[in-house]
Image 1 (tube, rainbow, N blue to C red):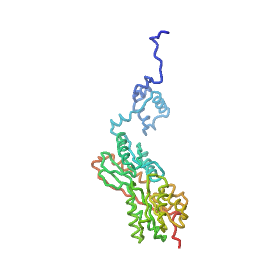
Image 2: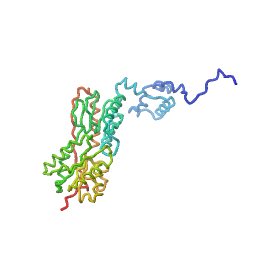
Image 3: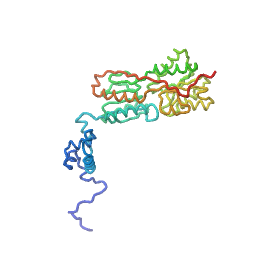
Length: 358
């Protein structure tokens, strides 16, 4: 057996870590390697607007040195020093086409403008996931929470903005639609077209807007002398964000042998499902049955027929929510009273509604 050379360095293996990697390289180390000031290096590596005044060649050298030295900024240590993370948490039911995605696009646009990062946690309307994900976000040092169609039941030490939230809780700002105006627009439009037999597809039990939307629709119907019978009301079941929920709800509605001439759908997604169910049962839309959706998602305009719908300014609601959350972050949440910001709907008339056939 050959003798072991005591002077020979041990061979590296897959589990060993290079000594340079073991060392926590600081920003000062990067600066020293380039013979530059730590301030200059910091301005470049943190993408500060001041970096515009630094020659591109110098910036390239700084980034190359940071890569070669395996420099990693310590954001946690920085946030402890500054007590700021410039990060917010977003609670959302699910990532799918429609309401949530449109609101989130407004949130994202505003946060990008203000230099904030965000975490998104989806909960599929499960109370245990709402609780767990909230703890998850707090543990990651978010400065505030934006809740989209997510129930908030308790006051928090963090500022919270709830989009489509209807509970008045200290420290929580609610961004809501003027539902009475929305209902008036929908019923008035159908009434003007001669519809007196109107069915309603109610939202799921867990949706924040379900009850207020139904109540305001029924109230507006009474004001116009339209009676919506109990067997002309059906409800979306399940948390599937696809048109299938509207399809199944309309199938149930049709099984009652009703003679309605128009349907008010809870949202555009369910309206699309309702149209398929009606067609499969021999009805033409809008010749036999007119349909009004809600939200005005992108697909509403390009569906066949294009959907008449009540437009919620979803992107604006997201942007407003983010804007007010950032404002509230600057305050002491304990000193912040709950308040409500109301946005206005619009009626968008397309091809899915027509006058009642004589």
